[in-house]
Length: 76
Image 1 (cartoon, rainbow, N blue to C red):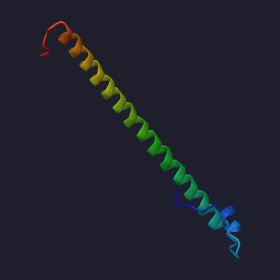
Image 2: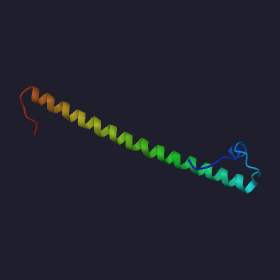
Image 3: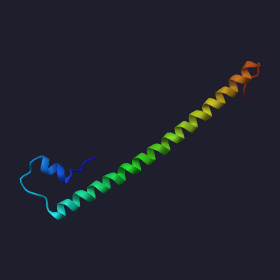
Image 4: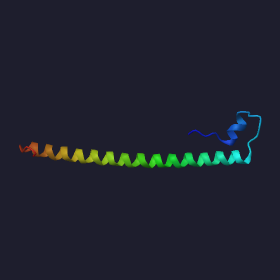
């Protein structure tokens, strides 16, 4: 998301090398980004499942109403 990796620093031609502490910070930031991304994906998946379940329920109710209407009964 917002982190820069140590190899990316060398590609961008930064003159100074990174210290152990800076590399540790980069690794921690990368791990935190991965954790947040996993949580967001999991939350999105749950919302999508709920939306699909609601859509299926609405479709079932509509089909039942159409079946009743086809024989001349009005749904209550």
